Image (tube, rainbow, N blue to C red; front, top):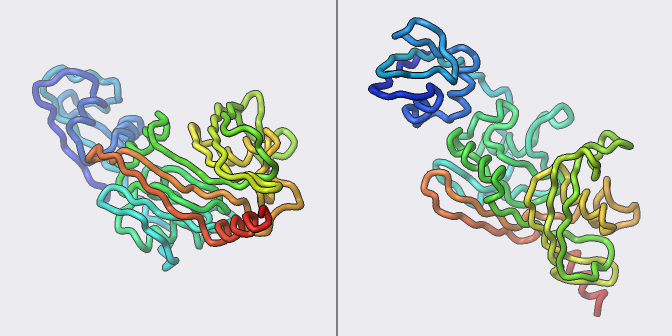
Length: 305
């Protein structure tokens, strides 16, 4: 049986969704919106099912039929995971190269979500049973920092920061070719490729995508760059760098056939910063390059001498 929640709003006027959000601090705005949308909120005072835009005129009591919590089908797995930071609201993890973020048809297990379910006690439920805690993703063969939400209120805050472009995400990438200038900005829309539906591409009717890059180091046939994301489109850095003629080294999809040996693209989510959902404190994290990346750079430096 699902639970019922009784809420009385005293001497207040205004839209019901806004008043309920203020009253029910333990539930997120999107949860409350979905209850209203699904017709789960009943006014005991006026004896009717009410929607989000219902106007409360004074004192009114509501009964909310809470939906049954769907049990997670995905099993926790004891997979080693580097937890860089954790408190009751958020966690930051360093995802290894080769690990898929969440289960899908092709990857039902051994994902970051399976590891999170084992290592962390609580995870947000906004993204459903397949993606608990996941606010943003990085590709399977990209390593580095990811923020994890441990409850729905934290999830909403982190997702809003991503949407409003107030969080910080910086990547280090190794690309083919010698970039002559010191920095640049790529502002080109990304969507599904018209030629190959499995790939992303710069397309006219795509979604806005902005990548800023700065040159860190130059080698004989490669350039090490730092990329700062303004948007977070699928494969954004990989697509944008290929678009301007400097594809990522090791990239099996967007790079040249002849490339550096590794475990996929040389791309690492090195820096992550965001405002803590509860305290408002700015949190910033950085993590070193994985071994395969740093040893490849050492080889390139020796060849440069």
